[in-house]
Length: 107
Image (cartoon, helix red, strand yellow):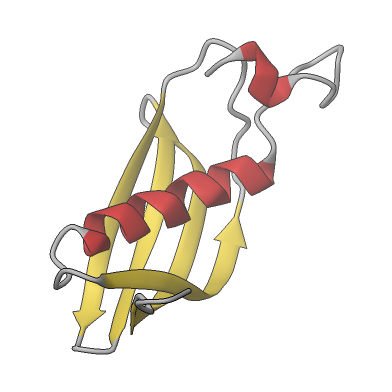
C-alpha cells in the first residue's frame, strides 16, 4: 500500500480507509466480470451490501483481494469479495451486483 492512500487518515496510526478497501473489492469483481462481456458492453455497479471492516490495513501491508462471481445472467452479475493482509481478513463486501449495459454509440 502506498503512503498517499493513508495520508491524513489517523496521522499517528496510518490505516487504509474502509472506503478504499471496499472500492478495491468492487473494482476487482467489476474488472474480472468485464473481461467476458461482449464487445461494446460494460458492467455498471448497481449495489454493494454487507460491508465489514475487521482488521486494519497499514502502510506497507500487501492487501490481497479475493472475489467470487455467485450469479451471472445476460443482464446481471452478482458476487462477493474479501480482502486480506496475510491470513487476516481486513474487509468484506458480502454482496455486489453489476448491471450489464451496452455502451451508447454516441455518448
